[in-house]
Length: 250
Image (tube, rainbow, N blue to C red; front, side):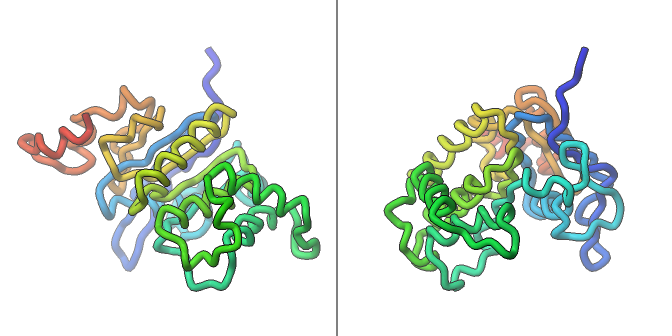
């Protein structure tokens, strides 16, 4: 029996901030073509896991590979959508220019984006419902519009693997539905998506794999097998009587 190849994995990944452990020996595997949701309480290390794998945070131990290779060798195949709160929204750029930034990796430092790159950017904005805001300054956007604009930038890059850090946090229902439709389209194309998510009730709506994390891996695998109340209780360190909390998971 042939196992599904991995889009990415971390091995023995540990991260420490100011002498406090944030991740402890994390072995994290994402099958190619899956939509992997990373779920856990605040401070569980969900965003740190992504950043450490991508080299944005230096791990104390361990390493990550992507399609069996170091990140630097396959950088163009990996897209990253950061948390909205980590972005400088005062940076003077328009929505279309933000989307065009998704082409920079293939253009390099010398070539400048032209009509073809702007056409790709506009197509991505149409996919996310942001074409009418193309000339708008990013600082003028609502929370949901900002997230859709950054999703468009990732789409322009056209990676095989997407990392998305809390893309639904603080956005309106319209933006969330638009983004979910894009995720479904990407999944249908065989793309791999790793998404940090905090709303327990909707995890299985679009994630076919789930990783429950609380500084270490509590459970990871196919959604229905992994996203159980016992595993959720363990990840969130919830008491046996916390039924109201556990009910959110369905």
